[in-house]
Length: 102
Image (cartoon, rainbow, N blue to C red; front, top):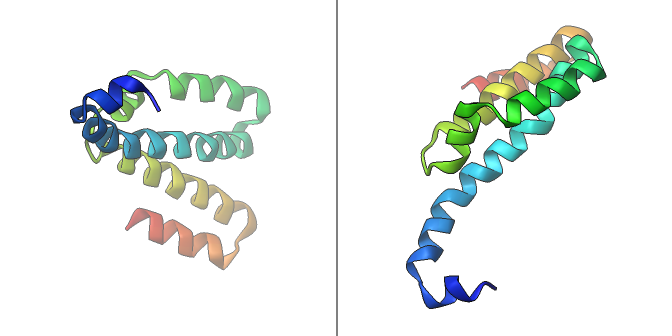
């Protein structure tokens, strides 16, 4: 463990506040890539993923301890479920779509 964190316990609470937002944004990335891959192909998905990661609002959502990262994650999840449902017409994708959009 980093000695600066051990010596300054106020950093532990800041890390604990910001870590969930970073995890949510990182979890949105593979879903975003899968969605774009199904819609446009792998080459476009690769470029779009880089643009997604370095977009100013995504970076801001990952850095702040605000609930907006959850909105990003569930919006991307709803878009992915919509694309999967549209392509397969499977009921489980429709359930996931409504659960993510709720």
